[in-house]
Amino acid sequence: MVPLSILDLAVVRRGRPVAEALAESVTLAQDADRLGFTRLWFAEHHNMPGIASAATSVLIAHIATHTERIRVGSGGIMLPNHSPLVIAEQFGTLAELHPDRIDLGLGRAPGTDPRTLLALRRDARASDRFPDDIRELQGYLGDETMIKGINAYPGKGTKVPLYILGSSLFGAQLAAAFGLPYAFASHFAPDALEHAVAVYHERFQPSAQLDRPHVIAAVNVVAADGTEEARIAYDSVLRSRVRALATRVTGERPIDDDELSVLMDSPVGDQARHMLTYTAVGDAAAVAAYLESFALRAQADELMVTNASPDLEGRRRALEILAGLTVGSPV
Image (cartoon, rainbow, N blue to C red; front, top):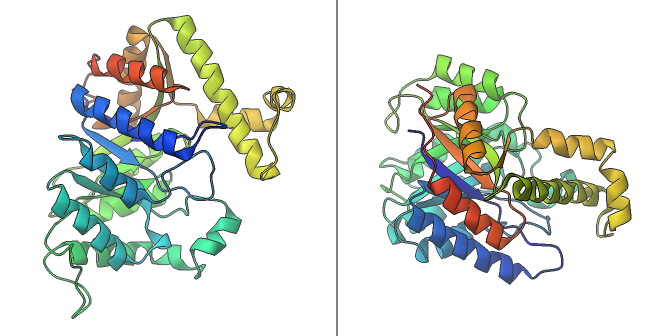
């Protein structure tokens, strides 16, 4: 069977406080823990008022403290934004506090817009060093540092498992060469999914962490007890996505409902729909059938679900529906 995991974007609902979003993430994490999901990841995003997971390692620590079994990690840390030593210290600390429960997913993208990138990365060439930074990070978390005399305390010897995140062939090739699990961001970047996974399988080299390929494919889910309820919820999700995309252009100026209705039939609306290409919408039977088909398409060993329902009650019910599903193996 294909394990199910959760990607939580710590969504801040329009007009609501950040503290409420973080409290909802705790509630959902405890539900996911109780219901038996494999892992729960948070993503590093910056300068986005609708997402509260910018300080990703801090949020991971908070969630891990309020759960008992589920693995908690990053999906992902955008490594070029940081020093590998600092990330090793942060996740080494997490691993000491929560043994065998911490994952470190790594991405190369900035997790933000070009202007914010300038505030994050004082060196525009930082992403070019991504492969070398991963090797440096592996050394800090392993038993032998690559830089003589420099160790991560905490961090050394914790061997926090690394995952490569991506939405292109670059990430697939890197994960394959390094012998690491590969997580594809098909929940918002669907185009290269099948090609990237094929390249990853073809070029995979076993490593100390992993002896065979492991693909995690991300997929959006809007699950409800009834088909019509799910369809209405999906429409709300789509409108929120269009609003978020438009706000990146308008800055702080809010998008009113009339303007949003016009945008739904614009290129911005088309972009939002394309980003949601891989989305399961419906009741338990419909979602189960979609996820099984998607797992086959993605050759996925694990599915990373973005629980996209627009409110807390809907997301909690969606987790219960997902926990009751059996998704067949793609092998």
